[in-house]
Structure formats: structure tokens, C-alpha cells
Length: 441
Image 1 (cartoon, rainbow, N blue to C red):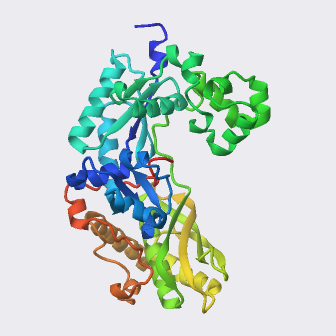
Image 2 (tube, rainbow, N blue to C red):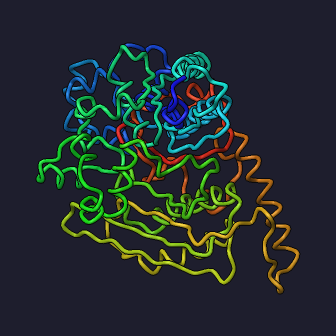
Image 3 (tube, rainbow, N blue to C red):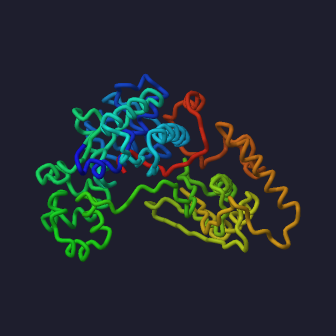
């Protein structure tokens, strides 16, 4: 073992390949080997592409209507996104990775950093290759793994593993590589985690186009030009860890639930039905995290490309943190009435909960609260438990039944979604929620 061996394999990153597409292939094996795309809400944009579709030149985020004929001509299978399914499969993958390490940081729905600086592991590449094989056998999801001394280099290593078949999906970005100027020249600045397109364009104007050129610049110049984040990125690319693995999941600072409607809405009843559905969903997510919200915001908007564009938002501060559906529903309706304008063709609305207070260790009781409020909280906890056990909510507030299901204009278009029962047949939900994350972001 080399002197710097342990340092050079401090962090590994597992990244699920074309994750949404891979999930669709798992539940429908007929898609194996076929070109596949997954579309966003309302089947608007391409949010995940198989490698075959990438080679066709279909860009990430491409509007579906612009490529519809081309995709059909090339026999591309199209699927509508099913985030509940993707969250479930992600949970399976992350749980399996956790068994292979003593420290894990789930970065997004399809990416996970984990500790590889374990002395008992003699060959980190072979170890990660075995992990990759087991994920495929048990979860049927292809994964690429990068090993490096820092998170930023691990991200580059993962991308290298994806693009070079000879790596067999695992690449170790050790000192012999990240100190090799010629080797690092192959990585454009815009592909580096922490730089992005805007900074990459700025660097390009200065003649800095790849990682080798970026890390060669003076620290004082980097900090003056791009601040501490730019300097930290350079240090990570040089092999000095600035951002260690965070073993615990960071608590959410806000919860937003929103959706673009399947068709424009003008009636208040339809708009309020959509908003209250989102509000109940947000409240359920809030309780699942063991928190209460001190603020709620409601917003609406029409088509931003229309001639009569309108958007507005209102918020409310609770006198004491709220968790119950009834508290949020009452306030959300009141806020909606304040911003609703009759005759407008609304295309989207949403609710945001924030100013969280942790309730896992108990909550401060209201001096004037009666027993009925505590009974309602107990009842709500029971309802949440029943809903979390099923594939869809079995109990919900009566106000959500006022508009019949077949009359809900706000429901998203999901023309290409696979049958829900078929999708969920081979998955096991555990209630975890992850940052929504398309494969190229």
C-alpha cells in the first residue's frame, strides 16, 4: 500500500446511470436495449435519456413537442415520470450502499457519497466493483462509482467511469491522475461540480477551459475573481478535501408542492381544489420529517408566455408552529382568495411551508389549547400511518372530494405512464423522500 493510498481513496461517489430511465427499465424489461426518454410533469420536457437517445442529439430539458416526431421515427419509447416509483427504488439502492460503508451522505435521488478510507479494504476498486454488481443483482439499477480524496474529484471520477467502458463502471482518481496535467486537461471546466455554465463562460473568456488550467491559477487570483467557493473548488481539484462527508441528513428548510396544470383553470373551485391537494401533501411531508411550520406561502400564476401574464403570492405567519391539515387548509384558502382574480387562466399554483421547528422531542404546548386539539393530532398521526402503508392515500380531508376526480382539470397529463400497480409491484416504499434530480443535473 502506498503512503498516500488511504488519503487518495477517502471518498467514493455512487451515481445511478440515467436513473429515471433505468427505473422504467426495471419495471418493464421490454425496454432493455431500446432507446428511452422520460418526460416531466404534463409530459412537457425530456428529463432523462438513455444513452441511445443521447447519441441522437436530444438535449436535456428539450421540449417534447419539438422532438416528438423524431423520437417516434427512431422508435424511442416514451414514459411519463413517476417520482413515487423513483423515490422507492432510490431508497433500495441507498440502503444497500449503506451496508458497504460506515459513513454515507445521500446527495440526491440518484447520487450518494460514502467513506472509502477504511483500512480493512485492501482493494477499493474491487470492493466498489462488488458493490456495483450487488446493486445490479438486487435492485437492477446500473451504477458508476468514482473514488478520490475529495468530493469534487469523486464526481469527475464517476463521470469518467460512465464514459470509459474499460473502467467497468469504477474509476479511482488517485494522485497519479489528479496530479497529471495532461490527464486533467480532458475535463472541461463546465463539467466540474461547483463551477457550472456561468462561471465556465467567464473562465473561457480568460483562456481557462479545462481543470488543469483552472487549478494552475494563483489562489489569491481565484478568491478575488470567484470568491471562496471558487477557491474551495480549486483546492478540491488539487486533492485537498474542503467538504467532508456529512453522515446525517440535513433537515429541510422548506417544503414546496406545486404543479403545472393539465389545462388552464379559471374557476375558483378548481383552483382551490388543486391548492388544497398540494397543501395536504406538503403537510403530510412536514409531519413525516418530525417538524412543524411557522409560515405558509401560497402562489398562483398564468401562462408566462401569454399576453395577460399574472403571478402573485401571499404568506401567513402562524402564532404557534402548525402541523395539522386543518390549520393549513384554512389559511391556504384565505390566502388564495386574496390573490385570485376572476377570469384569469391559471396554469400553476403551489404552496410553500417554512420556518420549521423540530417536534421529534416534543413541542411546546399552547397554554389555552384544549384536549380536542391533542386528540386531532393523534387522529392525524393514525391517518398518516395508514396512508404511508398504501400505494396511494386511503384517507384524506372531505374538502378534497368536493370536485369529482374526472372533473379535476388541474391533473397533470401523464399520457405515457405505465400502470401504477405494475410499477409498484416489485418495490418497497419506506417513506423516504429525496431531492428530485434528473440524470444530467
